[in-house]
Every structure is written in C-alpha cells, then in structure tokens.
Length: 227
Image 1 (cartoon, rainbow, N blue to C red):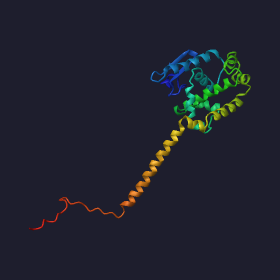
Image 2: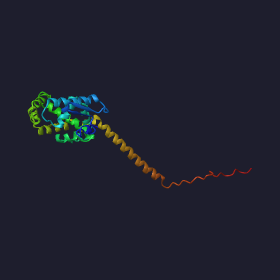
Image 3: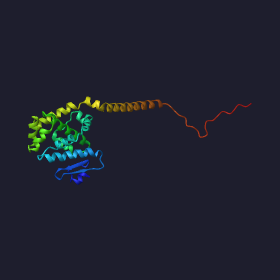
Image 4: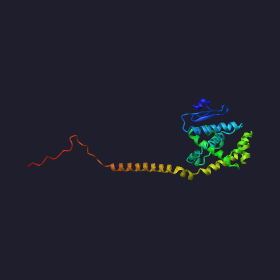
C-alpha cells in the first residue's frame, strides 16, 4: 500500500503519490482511470519543480486537480449535502480533510480545486500565471496571493467560502438529481406507512373469527336416503 511505501505520508486509500524530491510517481495499478491520475501527479512534480517556496496543501492538491482538468470533481459538490447546507471548511481544515478519511476526500479535493480556480478568477488576467511567477521567484505564498488578488489569505478564504455557498445551493442540488433522492425517500416512507396501516386493519378483521380444525378423515357426509 502507498502508506507503507511512503512511511505513512500518503493515505491508505490514495491512488497515487508524487515524490518531487526524487522526481518519482507511485501509482496503484488496481485503480481506475490511471491516465487522469498520472496527469494529476505530473502536475505535482511540475509545480514543485518550478516553485521552491512552501505552499499550502490545499493549493498543492487544488493546483494538481486544476492543471489535470478534473472538472468532473465539481459535479460531486452539487450533490454534497454538507456543501449545500453551507458547511464549507476553512482552508486550514481543508488541509486536514485532504489527508483524512476516504469518505471526505472527494469533496475536499473538489473544494481545493475550487479555491485554486477562485485565485485565478480574482486576478485581472483570469489565470494563475502571475501568482505562479511570483512563487517561482521565491516570493512567499501569502505575499503572492495579496499581490495578485488584492486580498490577504484570510480575506481570500472568506471570499472563496461565500462564492462556494452561492454556487452550490439547494436549487442546484435539486437540479443535479437531489430531487430524485427526496422522491425515493418519500415513496419508501409511503410504502412503509401503508404496510403499517394494512397490518393494523388485518389484525382488526381477524378479531372474533374462529376457524374449526379440520379432521384427518375429512368432513362427514349424510348417508343417502333409503329407497
């Protein structure tokens, strides 16, 4: 498993891991869509090859997803109830979620990609190029974000979380298929309710009924009349 090969630095559920210092990528061959996974890991290597300063984990993973064109991750957020309810984690909490359980990882990766996309959107060029150029020249991450977006990282976090809440709403959840989930739950509830009502009615009808036991020889018949 990757966690044992990387001394616990990669989660056990991970599909791959990049080792920038050794310019090495480890892939699990039993995982689906290996080309996409490889693109993601190559983006990690390219980022760390160009940037020598430390960047947050959410930016590292979000950039890899963004560079690999993993736009389908955003579709999962449309049906994520925690996101739809507005429970957007802080960027610090997002770092923990990216290395947390497998059940929360998909949403965490999608949120990280959305944060990186918001960084690009906040720059007049609509790209990450100015930010990456400053990072390549050794400028600190927080200073590079301020210079390219006009926002401190704390302020950017607030702006990003509001943008996610505006993007992923209950209306969007219903359009994306959440309405079918509601309909399915409603139908299941109606079926169970009908069964409870029918069970009570059958029990009421059975009160007072007495069924005579059948004899082994069958019912007795009157003898035929004598001629």
